[in-house]
Length: 141
Image (tube, rainbow, N blue to C red; front, side, top):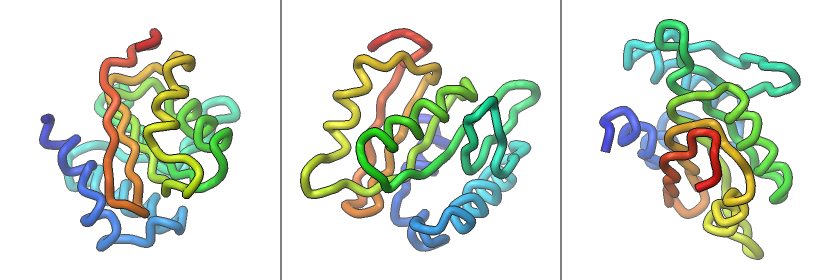
């Protein structure tokens, strides 16, 4: 696993460094981590109507796009679609599973959604689990 992806997948480090339910705290966490890893981070970037927590620029391309959503299934899928709008190498979504659906249900739904990202990490701050989806370069897995 890519060392940067491994660092991003550490839910315990995220929960120790910030309040995962506070957007400003999360944006600051991803911004600082991006700087530490040598990227040019931007907080709250927009692309059309899509607005996310943080993007890490690597030259002219977006290496990472990060956001959070704790709403219903449609809101979470909307957040993933917003991440995809930035066409990053790595997308990170911070969320929390619900009693009536889990992260695996969301990932199953994504089979019908074309994403533009190489790796999607879904960090479940409720369970501490991380789900990874690879190889989503704009076509259906």
